[in-house]
Amino acid sequence: MVATLYLASGSPRRRELLTQIGVPFTTLAVTIDETPLADETPATYVERLARDKAAAGLAGLAGDRQAVVLGADTTVALDGRILGKPGSRAEALAMLRALGGRGHEVLTAVALASAGRCEARLVRSRVTFRPLAAAETEAYWATGEPLDKAGGYAIQGLAAVFVSHLEGSYSAVVGLPLCETAQLLAEFGIPCWQRQ
Ligand SMILES: Cc1cn([C@H]2C[C@H](O)[C@@H](COP(=O)(O)OP(=O)(O)OP(=O)(O)O)O2)c(=O)[nH]c1=O
Image 1 (cartoon, protein in one colour):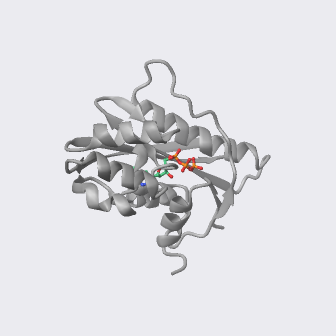
Image 2 (spheres, rainbow, N blue to C red):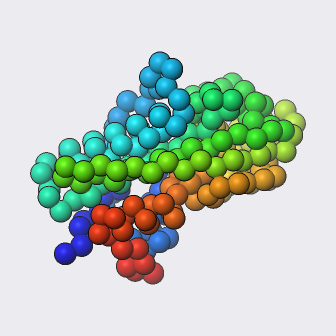
């Protein structure tokens, strides 16, 4: 019997990506504390959050032995500094100014939790932005797109015109590394391509 998969995420991107690979799931709402710990590296941070989201989702299912819960987290790292979702216009403009004309890392972790088991994969991608003019970053902020995105941009959206180079996993930058997610799901007995 195939386990029941739950997606512990409010992200529409993650729902679309998981649907893309033909895996049926039910969405769960979870709330966790996303504050980085003192001296936490971006890699440790994203993996901890992905695991916390999966564990919080599983805890809410109260002993369902068939349940497998997927949690994921994405963050942008610039010179080892974590750039999360901008909380204000000023913060978004500062992030975009810092990202323009150079490369940065996007880290996404995916975690699966079931009764007595939790495993995670971390995927690093490198994204390079062409130089950005101040007027452009202001116009981009005005579109509303930066607000709920790590690093204040969406590669799958209007910010695609900023990206001169990508090395790594496109789906991971958007929010869920599909190759690694499919491999992890298979380890938990959940196949992809179940429905098109
Ligand atoms: C860099 C980048 C991030 N993002 C998004 C992916 C994530 O939704 C978001 C990072 O925030 P997360 O905290 O990873 O996720 P979330 O709060 O949106 O959803 P969840 O409920 O699963 O915690 O940034 C893009 O959509 N495109 C991009 O190019």
